[in-house]
Structure formats: C-alpha cells, structure tokens
Length: 344
Image 1 (cartoon, rainbow, N blue to C red):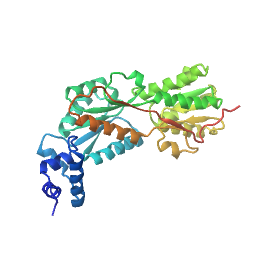
Image 2: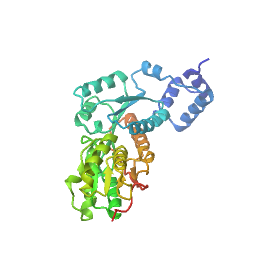
Image 3: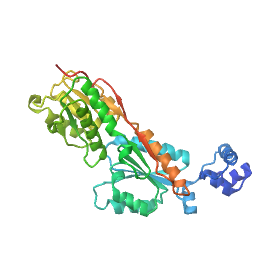
Image 4: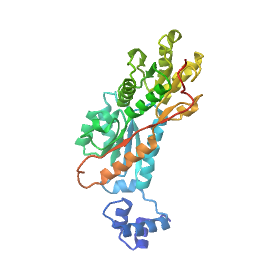
C-alpha cells in the first residue's frame, strides 16, 4: 500500500500542511520540526508525487537548464551538476536545447516556460549573454541564474550570475607556453557569439603583451568550438611547411585542440617536440588524445551545481535581495604531455 503524506504526518505528530512545508523546503520551518518530519519520511520511505504537487496548486517543482552548445561533454557535465542539486531539493529538471540564432527562439523559449510551469532557470552561454532573453525573464518575474564568461570588475550591476574567468585561465596557459620558449603561438578560436571566445583571446593577448611579444593577427584562426575547426585551423596555420613559424597552438577548447593535434599528426609533426598544443576546459577530449592535452580545468558539474543552489535560494526568497550575488570560478592549468620546450 502506497505511503501518503497523511501517514507521514501521523507518524511525526504534525499536520499535513507542516509535512508539505518541510518537503517543499520552506525556510520558515524550525529545525526540530524539520528533523522530526524527515525522520518519519525516511522511516516510511515516503516518495512525494511531483506531478500531484504540480496539479494541486500554483507552486512549481521543476527547473530548466537551457543551452545552445554543440559540445556533448559540456552539456552532460552541466546537466549532472544541476540534477544533483534538484534531487536534494525534490525538484525535477527540464532539459531544453535551443538555437540562439533562431528568429523564433524567444517565442519558443517563452512558450516552454509557460508550458512547463517552471520555478526557475539556469542559463548557459550564449543565451545567458543575450539581453533580450534577460529582459523577457524579468518581465515574467521568472527567477534565473546566468553562467557567464567574464571578470567581476566587468559585471557590476548584473543579475545573479556565476562568472567563469576565462581571461585569467587563457593568460596562464599562454604564459606557460611562453616560459617554455614559445613566441609564435597561434590561437584557433571558438564561436564568436560566445563571450568565452573574446575573453580567452583577451587573456592570450595580455600574456603576450606582458612578455613583450607582439600580437600577430595572422596567427589567429576564427573557427567554432568543434573538432573540425581544430583540424581546419591547424592545416591553415601550418600550411606551406609552416611558413608562419608556429611552435605552439592554443585551442579554444579541448575539442578544437584535439582536432589540431589530429591534423598535425597527419602532417607528420611530432608533438610536442616540433609543436606544442594546448586546450581548454579539461573535458574527456583532453585525455583521449595521444599525447594527452595540456588544458585548463573547468569543473562544469561543480559550476552548474553552484548555479542551481543559487537559483533555489533566489526562488525561495520572499523579498528582493539587497545586492546581486556574483560567484567566481577560475579554471586552473593542467600540464600534460602535449606541451614542451619550443624547438631550437
């Protein structure tokens, strides 16, 4: 026989309304009452019916992760991070892929929110960087948290967000290559609509400048966050028997770097003896190549779990927070076998 909320209330010696408040994690419940109810929930192995909760009132018990990113590893890590928090909070997770360049995207997005009756959203780049989406969510009074590439000093006055300091991470990787004697460092960029692309390029340029190395536009290949862009970028940069004198390639992400490494090996270029290659994000791509890629570790599952935690806190808040919350994550360099001293 299925355990009901009434059974939990009887065992705990409280009202059904109190049990509901505990299960919904309302902040006003006293700890003693919370512990008493949760002990009864555990003893009876009570499982709340999410669908029934949604039908019973106006409260929503689902949040959405919205993304436009072709990198499956990135999406899975983000999904797992948010999902782990949803399980703790008793919420369901709606996964919503969309195209940021679709003319109908905003209408589609609004329809999804209304149909799913969401409690809030976690927005990933580049959607999190689009002001029209943010304005729409504000008009709908829909709680959200944004994942953004940037530095805190650049984001004053922005809504609650998680910042990933791609600038600092790209600076560190570039400096790592410079310290190994590299001066002709090429960069295969990711999608230009992603702010992470401009931030990583800016970090690369700053590291060059701080080490008195002139920026060379011919060493920049504008591509996408894909394996194919890495292949095409490396072929272009290393063409004509490497007439540009490239000794290192920085990939916009690990998928790009893996493509560059693949192309270099097809050209019989030894890695890292003749060419060093570095990636970004520390995805499985970085560990599936030979040699394994130097990269910047970006804990996407931790970042997205933190975003979900912030979202639930914001959604529960009964009053406007005095100031927006900004949390910073800086990817850290992971040195592996794909980088080494510049060839003599």
